[in-house]
Length: 87
Image (cartoon, rainbow, N blue to C red; front, side):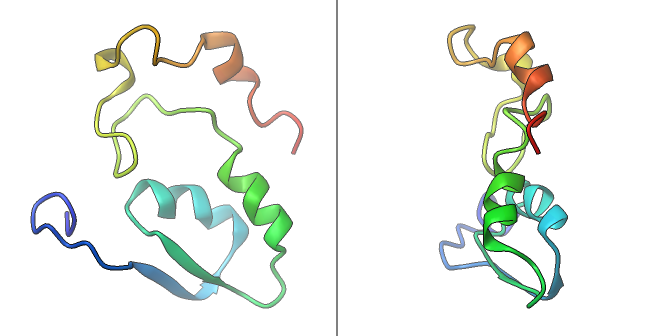
C-alpha cells in the first residue's frame, strides 16, 4: 500500500527475528530488504526466495493475478507444481 497508493519509493526493511521462511511472504508484501537473525543462512535465504515459481494471487511483486497474465508470461503448471522440490 505504501508504494501503490502513496508512491513510496524508499527501502522497506524487516528487522528483528527475521527467519528464512519469512522471506517469500515479506517479498510478496513489499519488503525489499531484511536483516536476518544471526543463526540464519544467506544461502538458505536465497533458496527460499526461489522456492515458488509463481503465485495465483497478485502481490507487491506481480500486480496481476495468474489468470490475468498473458499465456506466454504465465508459469507452466508442471514447473509451478515442481518448483521447490530441491529444498
